[in-house]
Image (cartoon, rainbow, N blue to C red; front, side):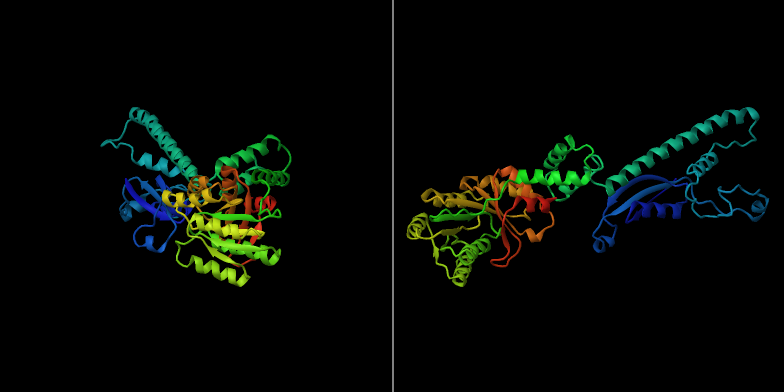
Length: 412
């Protein structure tokens, strides 16, 4: 038996190469996804399909001319037919060549078999052919199952009108368990409604899960609002957008305080924003300084507090931040998270920031991804409303108060 591996971008391409080299009698032993062999691994980034195939015997030697001349013509579809080495056409019996191979490999005797011997050989040959057929059929079923998994990683779980909704949620990186909860709820009362109506009901369910947005609430007295979150989430830029919105857009008296004395250039960055908007800006290096500054700003409508980005695993830095809140707790604490953060990392950030008492979520960088399921995942896990979302670096344009309806459409 001759065994060889073939490669292709798709399963069909690899199988076609098997047919071209080994013929229709080849048996496929295994299929799998692999990195391209050799130097192709440096050129191709995508994986390839590897097919291991086998064919019985070795290539036959050319027959003598007189033997060829004496050989009777073979029926169409069997070796030696006018079609030569061309592969079997679609619809041909895939077991014809296998039967021929099994017959050619039957035990040979040194003498002409008698009628009694032939009568005992025929049932055994038929049994061997049947066994080969069953083996090939089993391998083919496995190949088909493997191809379906490779081409369709999310098998259908729901009826035809509901499955697209479930798939859209999963593709948006809504946690599968949450996506199933939504789709199961639709399934209970969705018989005969059609995909369009079910989609509208799905949007309504997402809106209820997200809850109404809760932007900053000004109530006639000085409102102190702090932004907390990990490094790189975009707190300082977001704070500048909020300051410009309320000071320039709504004509409110706004002041800025930064507690970020750790990051290089953080103070200068916020000072530059403050100067452009004509707003007072203060730096507090410890809780006592922050309290003193807040006491002087009681006539302001809004005081925005910028904090240093904290590694959620750094307990010492987190305790330093909590010391500020012990001295004077803000009226609102917004946890700022980038929507491009991995779900597992975002969960850890939420758990380690619970001591800060954050009461709202603020998501940044919605323009940097097309998968917005994290908005729903974290809103459900944290049980906190979303206050704002940002969609770019422009100050103050790229920020908007969260609206559940708009976010639901973005997710679905």
